[in-house]
Image (cartoon, rainbow, N blue to C red; front, side, top):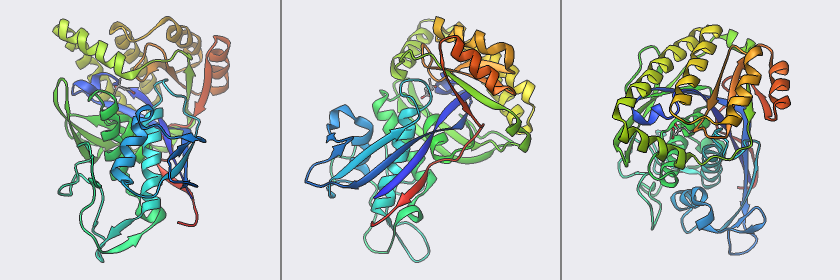
Length: 371
Ligand code: MEV
């Protein structure tokens, strides 16, 4: 049995704009997706007590093909505190947690010098996690080597790579690595089309999207201790929103009105200002940038009355407020020094509120036994 978990994410800056080469900043939140895998009792795959239906769960099926092809069937149980369809990266958290659980259970063969005999890595030949594997393990390199099992087999980079490939596959080819990188690495992450000076570069990601080839550079944003004085309060409207649909609508709008790309670039400027404020612990500036980012997102047409109600309710006790994620429902986020008050105001306005520290731990193995 292996139990793994990965955090949800909250985008502080740059949603949508990140799909057009602009930077985005996201932080891992306290709410996590927990996955338990055990050997199946029969010759079938099971999910949550039911027979697994691959067509209903493309994320799970994509990982199964890449990490567990033609191996003994498994039983998967999911216990997630990340609400789905709400802009908090629930599918990324699920993909990354499941990838961690499967890798820990499967293990990894490594050479005496620690180099991999198998796995998915941008630096390894023939490990294209993005190609649809139909036969065999796409990540397999060569037999032999020592078998590392459990958490010793995990690699955050591999989880981020696999997670992104799976998200891209199920989001019609339009997925930035924001959600999956945050779920894998944890903390605060900045995604951009270039290497950003002053931030620790982690990896590059390339993807062929319907709008052309994209490349993203993923960075870690190191935060000073005073960030811990503030909290994020996330307000869920309960309105379900489908990322792929909202993303496709924004793409159509920009195609019709190319001059609106200027607004996307302004969001990018705000993301850079916000990332610097996060890195230096300037909480008031951080909040200001968030509220300015919201106004631009509203202009792009991705807010909705329910989000505006929660944002207005949270604003008086917050340093900054905005919608987070794809929008048109889902969640808003407030940066606040008075989380209890902000939480109360959101709930009074009809939202479901969650309090989180800023930048929690990334994917991890929580329990392993009898591999
Ligand atoms: C969704 O959480 C954020 C978007 O920018 C889409 C993406 O980055 O893949 C809207």
